[in-house]
Amino acid sequence: MNNFIEPWKIKIAAALNEFAPDTFSPSQIIAEIPPEPEMGDIGFPMFAYAKTLRKGPAQIAQMVFDKLNDSAVEIAGPYLNVRLDRAFSAKKILMDVFDGGEHCTYGKPQTMAGKKITIEFSSPNTNKPLHLGHLRNNALGESISRILAACGAELQKLCIINDRGIHICKSMLAYSEFGQGKTPESEKVKSDHFVGNWYVHFNNMLKEDIDKGYAEAKSPCMARAQELLVKWEAGDLETTALWRQMNSWAIEGMKETYSRTGISFDKFDFESETWLLGKEEVLKGLEKGIFYRETDGAVAADLSAENLDKKILLRADGTSIYITQDFGTAIKRYETRPFDKMIYVVGSEQQYHFKVLFTLLDKLGYPWAKNLYHLSYGMVKLPDGKMKSREGTVVDADDLIDSLRDMALAQIAEKEREEKVGDPAQVAEKIALGALHYYLLQAGPAKDMMFDPKESLSFNGNTGPYLQYLGARISSMLRKKNEEVTLNADNFSLLVSDAEWEVLKTLASYPEAISIAADSLDPSRLAAYLYELSKNFSRFYHECPVLGAENENLSNARLCLSKAVLKVLKDALRLICVPFLEAM
Image 1 (cartoon, rainbow, N blue to C red):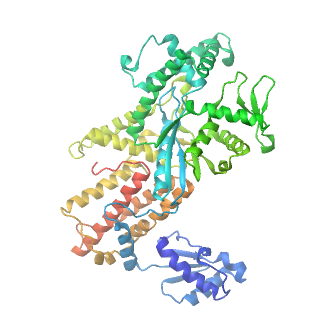
Image 2: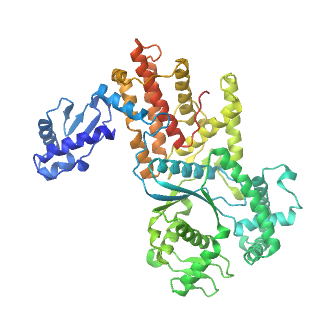
């Protein structure tokens, strides 16, 4: 709606300046969308100007109304409400949507043109497969990347593979002691699931030690895992060979899941390649007096002045911890490709970690540390409780998608749609991904959420399959036309009914919806827009006959409106990682 709002801002600023010359600019004029359509299309509250003009808001509204002297403007107390010319506006909105032909350039506000943004997401460990938590992370990271790129940003999508550390050594220890040469192929198990099974095996070993009376940190199996870490950092050939083999299994399996879910990266970073750089930074900080050495030999940072706790940076045995390699990774990234902003998509449980990381990088003298941002997201739970990977009850991503696909396939069979949808298995897979990604993104990132598989697959309400069905229904209607819909702009002025007008206004607000989602790093804002568009189109579809309209010109205009909705729908679904379906 900004294309319609801006001219009115100019007019209202000019009217206000009649009472206080050179005081108001168009950017200062506040515009709102009235809560009810009968109140008008654009509302301008006068409260913000009362102090300057020393008048009541309602009095100011009357003064501006008199100056404007325009039949499109109405007074409602302290508000000026504008009613747009529907016939004129319909033509402008649809021509804007169709500008650029089949390639959808509409809705791309270019508000971030020229900005270099790096975004890190997923961040898997090579000791287990991707799980439901990763699916939310992946959907957020991929969707935000697409939305920012739509606004003109130069994006670099990165995945940091946590391929070293004590957690990796746990799986390695269990396999080395009990694996007996088994492989994913010999066991007929997806390779990352194979590695994950050994992580579960280690935790069973740990439970046995605890049952014998050992404290977890002092248990024999933990001691052996720590010995493996020391050997790895020392470059022991046998240990590093085992590490390479198990990591390759894990990463190969993860990449299959990324491909299946439409998640991609420009580059994979590996902690094993940056931990030494991070360790060097810690030692430099120690020399400069930024850090200090504990009595047991560990290196730490005192962050009490920043209202943070003491932070250990190197263990007493000299091995690095998680934050150590984060130093090296961040520094290497900026040196390789300087960024205007670096976004870390990581769960809310790591908020403190990133406060410490950003603070320490700033103390180490890196000015770009102020451009680092942690996009925190909430926990994903299932109806039967929180996932716990340590106990082996984690909901693996592949298993969840398989389950959703099978449920969708059953729905297709129940409705006897197999012959109409093409390949039922492929359609069911896309419905599953649409259900999953939309459900994970329709809530704001900061919120904890309950993922309900059955609810996510519903074809009614605020779900991915409902939006996919809307796209399939419009596609079917356009196919029934049996010929290409002619874009006759002269007919667009016929779209003046209330139902048609609500769809047009929603189309007009698409660029703003993308811009808001980009500025807030929140795909749920775009999901909410899509649901609003779908509701308004459904009302139009039921109230306004399209193929059976009273005359050919009106039918053409409504077909063009439907085609415009389809174009925006397809584009917006892509931005939130929901596959489009021609039939379902």
